[in-house]
Image (cartoon, rainbow, N blue to C red; front, side, top):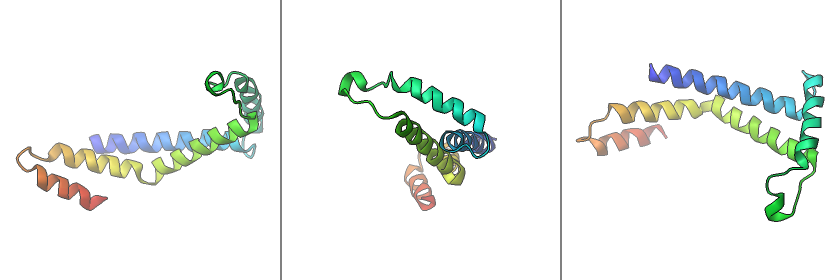
Length: 112
């Protein structure tokens, strides 16, 4: 059951990240949300978190594109196999005995 729950959570989070990253990058499917996000990033750019430390502030478009690309890539990684490796590791780690720890480690390494 743990494996199924982790797989579903990984798939749902991956789809959400890919969807939100796509909305930030292009107005292809939802142009009204894209324009609203563009305006919000213009406002957020004025209060960039690292401005007080570095004195540097990125352009709003670069900031939005960077966040969108990060969301798309992390969502794609979640969808393409992050859940498989995570659930395999958790499932094999839980079922192993403490007496047979070297065998468990070698079994886990075979999957990677």
